[in-house]
Length: 124
Image (cartoon, one colour):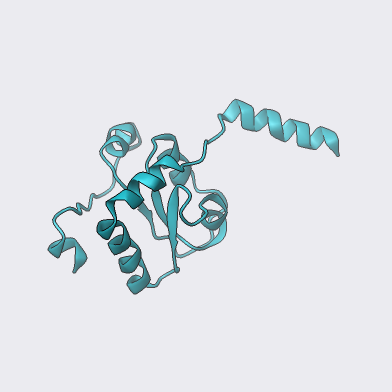
């Protein structure tokens, strides 16, 4: 069991919305092992805004938000072995975590996003 044998890994339980900034400030990598299609997971965007790289399921909106090795990594949906390999990849190469953090894309502010949506609708 990776969590028991690897002391650099600490698994946390649920966090309240109020404690999210504090929790993310102490997080090196956020894992989002969803098994279903998500449209546009806010969890990933919140992690990116806090400059936290992510490991996500290669599915739906997660795949659209995270290019492999740009702000995070992808793992095969439901494939525990592949998830373990991706985590081990980071543990074996500490510079990879730095590279992922440095490549986190900018998350548009909600006002900017809304303005862009209005532009798109006005163009059609």
